[in-house]
Length: 87
Image 1 (cartoon, rainbow, N blue to C red):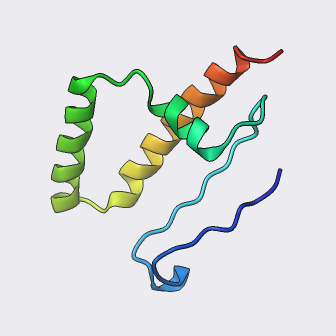
Image 2 (image 1 turned 45 degrees about the vertical axis):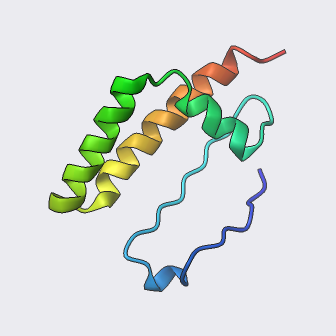
């Protein structure tokens, strides 16, 4: 597995929050393909629910814990989809 360089708006120690995740996938895809696969199939109600949740949690909670839960869910869904695409 290779690590791509990541560009942030500030050095990592100066950021309020930074999270990095990785998962071994059964097929090679680009980051954009992974994002599109992870977020595909979310209807307008789900998008509205995420926006509402993010808006409320940004006022009350740190973003980090919610972000980790969402990313973990996306990565699991991506891995399941790609396992079905293996040659």
